[in-house]
Length: 223
Length: 266
Image (cartoon, rainbow over all chains, first blue to last red; front, side, top):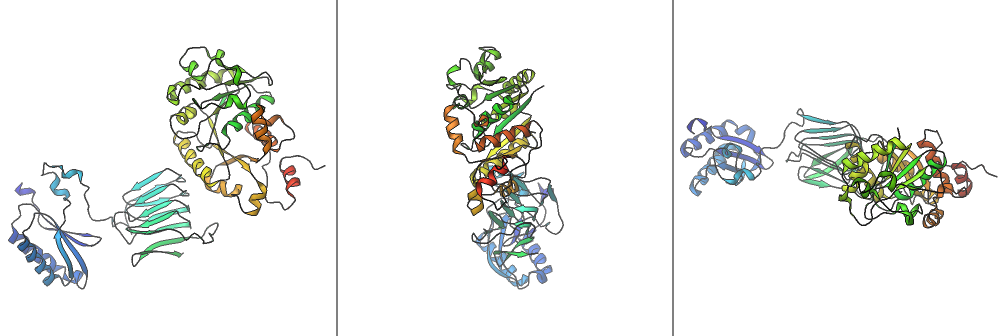
């Protein structure tokens, strides 16, 4: 057990920061490590507004207060909240013989939207087909109504997009959707959902458009 | 060796059975040896449309369960030489037949006939799986309605996943006047979405209802426009190059239709 214990781990998520404190970790040591990490990254945190969650070892209210005080003081960020994240961490599953493995692990979201794994679909995606991929998806064909593409990264359709596409499905708001002709049933990026205006005269042929999230709302721009 | 062609659509009521009856009869009139197989077990209709209902003794389920020999179950159409029907059972359900049994049946029929035309039930469940199991080719029937096109798209995907490549499309019940007014999906719109080759366009024709009720396929009726469309489809199945209908002319409806279906204006 002792050898398996790693130090404090910081992870980013869509709302801010997750601090992983290994079970049975000495609190004083944890506090020290958190302080060191936060101080060294204070330039990164400065001015940010974030929610901080921690996983792993359960802290007493006093201990939680102590951690929050250090975060407030040393990070330069505005800490909106500090609370225990109830979902278990991957590292702990193997150690614990309880049922927690049934609860999905909420890790940090997919970040390879500039450079990362990519799946190519070399045909039209038809009604009733669902493509799920942890990464970017490129479709060399159309996406028809009733088809669903769920990707943790970007989705690019080199054809007409008529179906449903969810980009950044695990929370990356910077993911985009691009199509040579964008007339989807619905598009989703991270938590944002949009549908096409019904009265809009839809363009025929090639008219490339890209959908991104701005201020929590999906916007579509001609390319 | 004969060719097995399945007529399918996903959605019900778009004209699978009528298409099966007309294509089958058309091929038989052209001198081919044809068998029509109704796989819509429990909801059989093809026998009615063919006017052969009262001659059924054995059916598809009897054949696969080996209650009778294949030859005993085949009903010979007395009007057209070389046309046979293998009817579906009416008092059983789709689970009475397995895909492997259909493959075996198709292989047996292939020895005897030039064309085996399979009438597929609506839906994507067991009946559909049975119908496509032994097929070499598929013809997908749709109507110019969004719901029918959606289902056709689903069906094409399922056919492709079963290694039945390049299905052909029939757009049934087209009303050129409505398309012209923009009230009906055009052939181009449909082909755009489904992205498969068109093998025929059948106009909406009340003659079809009359001939269906009488049990006489419209394909043999020279006055019926739908009949002409089915004759063209039959020729295309046999490999002839017949031009498709063109909806973009500005002439009157009747002369346009006449031209489209190859009838010379008087």
